[in-house]
Image 1 (cartoon, rainbow, N blue to C red):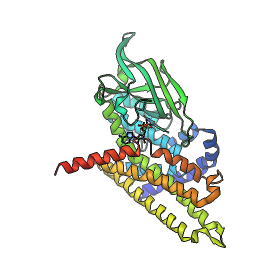
Image 2: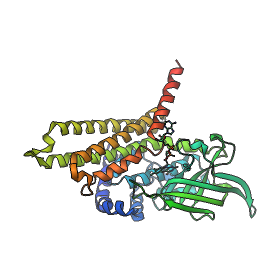
Image 3: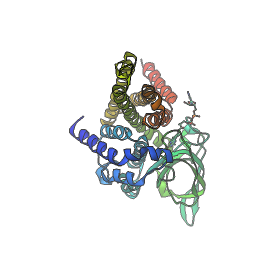
Image 4: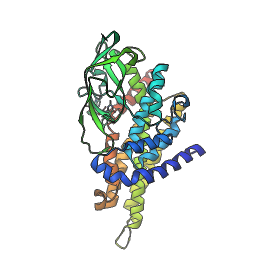
Length: 382
Ligand SMILES: Cc1cc2nc3c(=O)[nH]c(=O)nc-3n(C[C@H](O)[C@H](O)[C@H](O)COP(=O)(O)OP(=O)(O)OC[C@H]3O[C@@H](n4cnc5c(N)ncnc54)[C@H](O)[C@@H]3O)c2cc1C
């Protein structure tokens, strides 16, 4: 790590220990998201890290961002995910928005005053996202040109607490080319919230259904051009992949830390359980898999930063890191034995939080589908 990255990590560690860690058990139990914590992370510059300074961001690299997400995830996967998704919305606006749209929406998002949400999934369109059916029909209302949104979205991270929603809706024919992206603000007539999911993990991060009923969106809220929506969503997910990997590395690191500390202090058969080779091999493998994952995530981020993104590596980083987080957190519960299965230690929470990392932003089966497709493409060139 360079000096900036070390400083970032230390500052975040201090903040998370003071402000996040003391609430986590309670907030996980009660599904409480604290906006004041998000606002404070914003004041420290952690909610707009990769956005250029002209729109209120800090202008740091995706490598720096990955290190920061990893650190936050050691204390709370939920806050790390909230920042990751809100940053994804900022990246979309920055890359595809007009100057007016950027000026209007980015400062509140980058400063952490507001949260952004990314809205692609529907009940009938998960992995096959291009089959979405929420419609946006061109219309004119009181002399203003725009679109009438009808349909619903599910699984939306930060649904209900976000103010700016990037919503993919169908303006054209079936398939990916008929999808457009819209900026929808909380409070727009015809836009409401459906059920809040009761989840196994990520309990501090609300996940909600969005409902659109004759919701009028002015044409100025269309992002880029009609038909660009799927391209915009996929570009955003490409970035999201290794950031989810970074969160997974933090989640796994915390589980390893808890395991080693516990194994050193817990005695059975008149010796620390750390001294049993069966557990030593488990912990050695946990450490190995975490380092492999970290290297993949940082390499994918570096490629992105240097302007030569490597889609295959980004998929591998997400896949490897999230599978590692699931395995390491499960092993951590095993190493702690009975107490690992209780709320006395946080490893059970990290195990629950790890699971969904294998599902979001492209399931790990879909990552394998994409890696195989890219391999085939590489080999067909020869
Ligand atoms: C907590 C949470 C937060 C989320 N946040 C957001 C959000 O903010 N915005 C958003 O738009 N979405 C969000 N999602 C949705 C998430 O992206 C989807 O759940 C995910 O894409 C999978 O879709 P699905 O759940 O419909 O599963 P399905 O697509 O129905 O998949 C079910 C199973 O089939 C497998 N499968 C499907 N297709 C293939 C294939 N071609 N080959 C092999 N296996 C396959 C999958 O891997 C999976 O195991 C969130 C989900 C959760 C649980």
